Length: 392
Image (cartoon, rainbow, N blue to C red; front, side, top):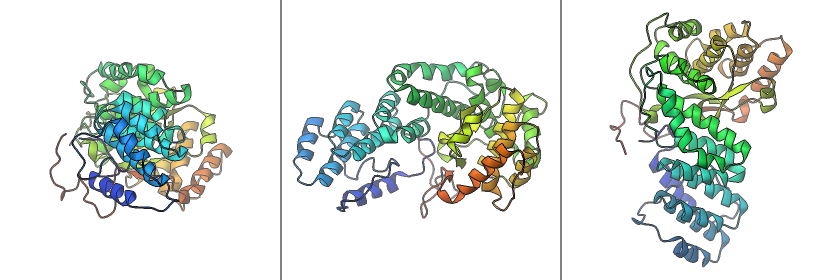
């Protein structure tokens, strides 16, 4: 079982076979983790030395590149990370060498070798940031020995982080910080989101360095469970009440990690994020954060309303724009153009208007994405028509 992934295995294989059959010299890598293993693969890959010799003997650079890439992915699938890295390094093109390390990192993460996957991201250079995001969010579920009602759940998360400290320490400081943030956000999301239990106990007990990630995950699950019961514009108040134990703990049907989906945004734009503190959120995103507990929960809840694409989201965002918190107004201004493009947005203060205009300008630039949805024409594994899910 793997966490939400925008590609299913058949589409990956098909993409790989089409790609290997291509001979045009100007084809570009996709950096999306396609092509884990072609059909009919041998049970064990050739050794790195054998593969290197076989690929190096090819006359055309394109053919050598694809040969090395395929061999590296085979090695990664069979948990021979050092061989995979060596094969990637044999690729002559800098661009394709980076792409190879990126795809190997994904394969290793899906296989459960997180430390080796992280090391491969460190070698992906121009793709290192998206690689870290895929590593943190597409890896095999961590199966934490805790649940949202456990006040010591943060210790299970800290244990995973501690086990990966040697691998993290090998990264450049900037990349290490990104990896730590994405890993922590992913771990808290896995603990709470989709559990069917928006119990605030674990999140409320989180130490300061975990608290923003914990609130992000709690708000996402609380909004998921309360969304059908509470008018969207009233959700921030309902989530706050659940957080403080002033209403019954929201509970409902769980969802499997491979069925997670939602609407996510990249940071928009990066320079506007420098004006205040931020915290990593779903699948590589960033959200504003606040040192005030309730204020930060309100921001996380507003992001969760957008994530779940709830009816009435426009009214909720307009209410947030009218609030007193600068960070909450900033958040609403960032999200509103994607929910209601016709909305004129705020006129004051200037900094909030600036982020609204920046977000609106990016609507046509591919910034808005839907995470976890299957490609067109493929069966949604979480639909009523899908075959039963299998672990493993």
